[in-house]
Image 1 (cartoon, rainbow, N blue to C red):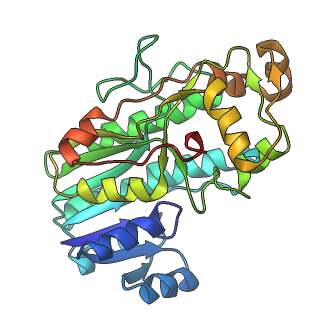
Image 2: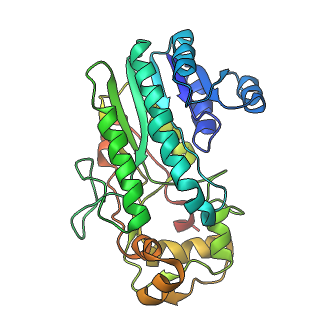
Image 3: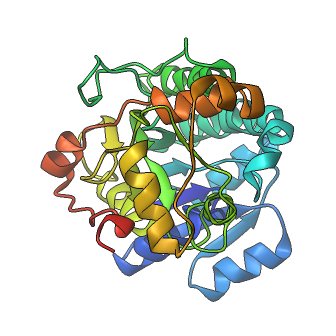
Length: 303
């Protein structure tokens, strides 16, 4: 199958390209500079250097690629979590405007299917349950979480707005593995090493993670599965009070401190409290059933 990947040099892009090539697909990766293009070509993919904000160039690249499927993994995220506020507006602009150019170009060039990166960690489920694919994103959450949820809601609405192309929304969990924030030596891991990520109150907010390589495998499986929404998360949705101490132990870090909601709000804001106490974990039952997907166990729960 001929597959066009936008965001081909990002955290999910690299393992996704590898999995696509491994399974026999012909891949064109869209990136922003020559060094990244050379890296893609050295791994066996074709590469195009295109600015996602240039609609004419995006359409030209897609027409030349003759792609059957377009995978939108466009993001603009910082290496350090502390820089998220500075990156938020640019990330939204890339996903909405750049991704909009990509979506329209995919339709214009005759692509059959469009896979869209979405979120499996800002979902709103009934208390005590896991969110399935019918659950909405939590647009009434704390400020930054709500803003992200609105962006993902708009992305999914765009995805399913046209009968001219098949839409697949990939609701990924929190990525971990190489080149992700939750890998040893990276942003989230370093915060835990410095005891900057406390268990808040009872730590009942449930997080769903997915290894970056498992996410790539599921994405490739979605190339031919029925269109729709898929939660791509592992089998271990865990409250913060469970996963965070286990992660610290896995890293060889000190045990996380315990702090109250009021104290954390004053220091780190409402979003930090939301992550720790309000997140709904997600169910992967549909992805396992339809895609035949078998994600690994959350790495640090095995330690």
